[in-house]
Length: 182
Image 1 (cartoon, helix red, strand yellow):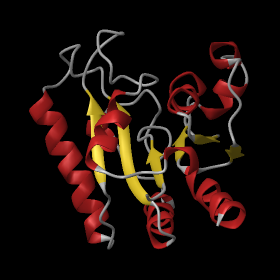
Image 2 (image 1 turned 180 degrees about the vertical axis):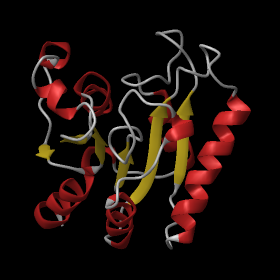
Image 3 (image 1 turned 135 degrees about the vertical axis):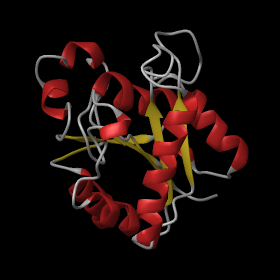
């Protein structure tokens, strides 16, 4: 069984945490951070809530075009991730919207993963850190995107959860794991 890192997209790897994927751009260090995770034996997955699809801001097909654009951008930088998973639903009408475990369960159906020694990395405590708790994995809260707000004004929305690590950004978080866990 292999270890994995499940990365949130918006606010974690780039863009605004409540932004639109059509305007998403990676932070300058994000692709290198994903490569570092892969180079150290982790499977790398991106998991993202995209409720704007259900709200009619754009279609699933338009979303897929932008997902493909990001996959191509990573590929052009020499990175092939292991999967890209999206919840297109709004509210709590599904089992895949973080912090529910549906996207991770889909990954586990296709991969043999040591979930207890894997990581959820994200900027929102109420979805990303709570997801890690729900699936029994480790976690890294990054302070980009909504990270500072998660630790401050919105800490009450995930008060019963403690991240394994708190990092300035995804690059620092991956480096912490490599240093401490391997």
